[in-house]
Length: 145
Image (cartoon, rainbow, N blue to C red):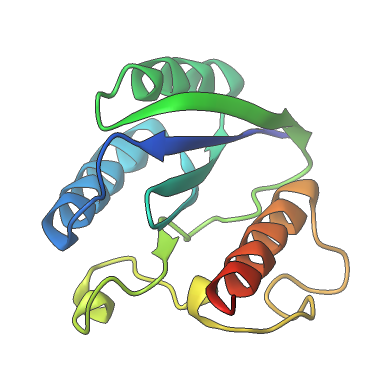
C-alpha cells in the first residue's frame, strides 16, 4: 500500500518560469531522497499537488509544504491508501507559461491537451487521477470563456 494526499492552494503571486524550475529541482532532489512521487499542477496561480509514499513521510512533507510562503489557502481534498503508486515517475505538469516550458526537466503536456477520455491513466483511473482530469477539464472550460 502507498499513502496518497491531494491538496489545492493558491500562489501568493504568479510563479515565473524560474520559480517553477526551482520548485522542480527541489522536488526532484528531496522527493527522490524521501521516496515520494506524485504530481504538481500549476496554472494562473492555482496549484494542485498529489503526494505519494510512506504515510508519515508524506504527512511530514505536507507539513513543510503548508508553511511555504509561495502559496496559501491549502485545502486537503483527498487522502488515503492506494494499492500502488499512481504517478511513479511523474513529478510535475502545468500549462505552458512561455514557449520554453518543455525544456524544464519533468515537464508534462498533461494540462495542455484537451482530451476528455481516460487514456492518460487507463480504463480505471484512481481518485487522484480523476481529480487531475477534473482539474484539466475545469482549466479547459475556463480558458474557452
